[in-house]
Length: 224
Image (tube, rainbow, N blue to C red; front, side, top):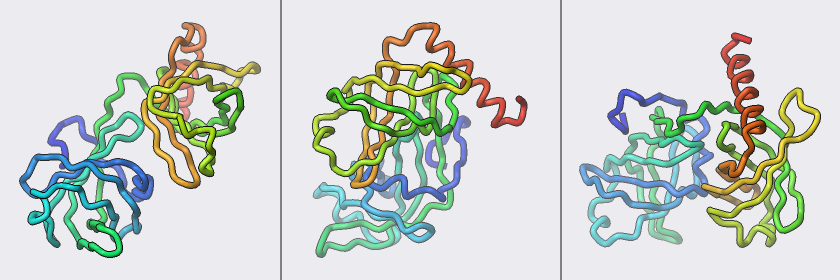
């Protein structure tokens, strides 16, 4: 396994295309030095490709068959998998191709319970409201996505930016509105994805979220 911990869970690699546009770290062979680069594409079941990390000491180490470990952070989990270099090209771009993994190891870094869910949500940025969706939710934050077509309004949206988010919890008539802070941002031409932490939430509001998460968890476990 990629982490050597008893707390590791094994998850499916079927949706590895979510890596596209994300920054990942790679270690090659027996070298523990991490090289950071971006994933540029995924061919499901066959390979994925990345930038060639810029490091003069690395050039002689990369050849077909070289073992590698890839790590990335997603929804509060550190994920990783073992693979091998498939090939390298230098023209027209310098790219590395890796074998598609058979499984992914993950370690949950969060202390609070989190559920995968789909909730319509609205964020307010620079006085304008934008529709999107919450894809997973915890008492302390969520993962938010929205359609994105290089809107200039988001050019200065960075990690640490704050804004309100509004969504309706099942069974509640009035929407819940919380101030948020971004902790992670990825984007491509079609979608903006943000890891968000809730800041300044009132106990009554966070309590409603915690109760809702407990209810959904029971449904997912067929214990409701």
